[in-house]
Image (cartoon, rainbow, N blue to C red):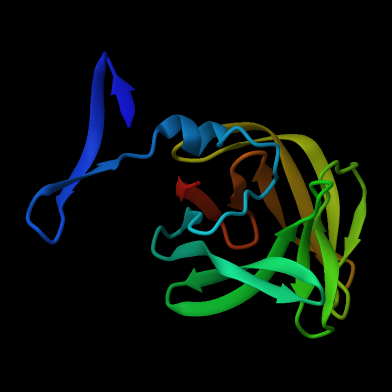
Length: 191
């Protein structure tokens, strides 16, 4: 539901009985400001992020939180990443201290993915790979076609010591930009 000049705006389509089904339209304030949580990656079943390549505007990436699974004694959210029809999965959880962890399926172990209280320069090594994640900044500003995001967390990605790109996260929203693939966040559904 969005309030515009005193009016409420809803999306509308018909359900199976032919009656209108009222669906709320995502307020721009949620897309630009988040859902009010402190999480760098809000994880709830049904959350979904849509990204568009801002260079060629052709490919769309969708990230969807599907359900939960237990692995190595922890409950993870199964996250589907759909890149123009190529689907991969990740298993991600939020620890009680707010850290975001990823289950490394190759090594069968839990790894830190995004620290809840990152420190500039903090190294986050992705075990079993040549990729290193490092906290680059906590104060970057990213401007996309839809929003201006101040004070984002920038995580720099290195392959064999060479910077290959960066991921940008905003509290209460998740990843808003990815410089490796030129992804801009264009819509989000957060529960």
